[in-house]
Image (cartoon, rainbow, N blue to C red; front, top):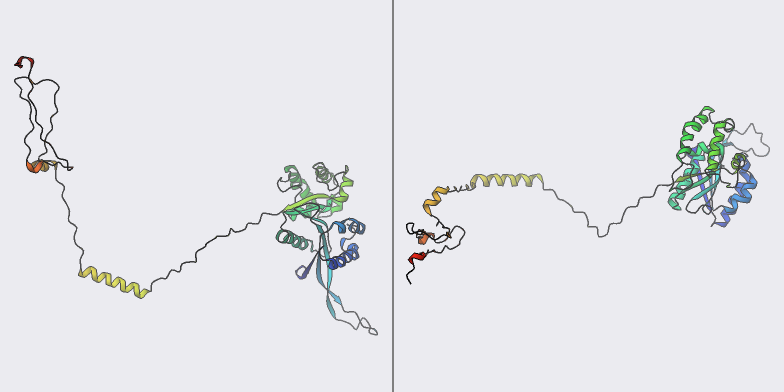
Length: 339
C-alpha cells in the first residue's frame, strides 16, 4: 500500500490551489487525525501561519457503485480509487532557517513517507538547516526513531542527561507496554522525564508550569541536516591526454633490431686508469721542498740550508702554480762586522 503513494505539495504563492487545499484539510481532519488534533486549532492557528501543505494519496480497492435499477449483489467489479491518507501543515516563519512542522496526521501508515518527503523538500529545494516540531507526549519515542532529538539549536548538542534517561529508562518502558501510550504515559518514570523536558525549557508553551498544561502544545524536537558538500570548480582545466600504446609487432621489430646491432657492433671496452703510488710520483717529478726560515742567526759551523736546483720540467706544481727559486742570504754576527 505504501508503494503506491502520490504526494501533492502546495505553497502559499499558488492562491487557487491553496484555497482548495485548505477546504480538503478541514473536511478530512476528524477522519485522518482521529481526534488528536482539533479542527478549531487547524482553522484558527495552523492554517493562518502555514506556508506549505503536503498531501499523501493512496490507491484503495473499492467496489463499483451500481447503476439505478441494478441490485448490489449483481455488481462484482472492484475499482481502484485514490484516497487521502495523510497531510502535513508546515511554515518557515516561526523559526527562521528551519521548517516548522505544525501538524502531521496519517491513518494508513504513511507518516514515515510524509516526513521523508518534507525533509527532502526542505533540504534540497528550500536549502534550510533542519526541521522542528512540537511532539505530543505519546509520540516522542516515534520521532526519536526518525532522527529527532530534544534540543533547541544545532550548534548546541542535546543534553546528556536527557539522552541518558531516555535510553536507560524510557525506551525499555515503551517496549514493555508494546507501544500502548495510555499505559506508559501515566507511569511515574515517564512523568519525571516530561518534567525534565519542562525544566530544560523545551515545552512549546513557555508559560506552562504544570505537565498537564505543557502536554497540550507538546515539547520541541529538532532534526539538523548535515551541510551539503559542493565540488569546487576548477578553472583552466586541460583536456585529457590520450596515451597511444605501441602495437606488439612494432615492439618486436624494435627488439630484433637492437639484438642485431649488439651482435654486429660490440660496445667498446672501457679503459681502466691505474693510479700512481706516491713513491712512483717522487721518482718521475720530484717536488721542491720548502725550508722554514729560522729566526735565530746561523752559527759559523752550520752552513745555511739551500733548496736544491729546480729542473725546467718541474717548475710548475700539481695545481698549476709556478714555483720561484728562493735564495738565502748569509747573515753575519756582531763579531764579523767589518766597518
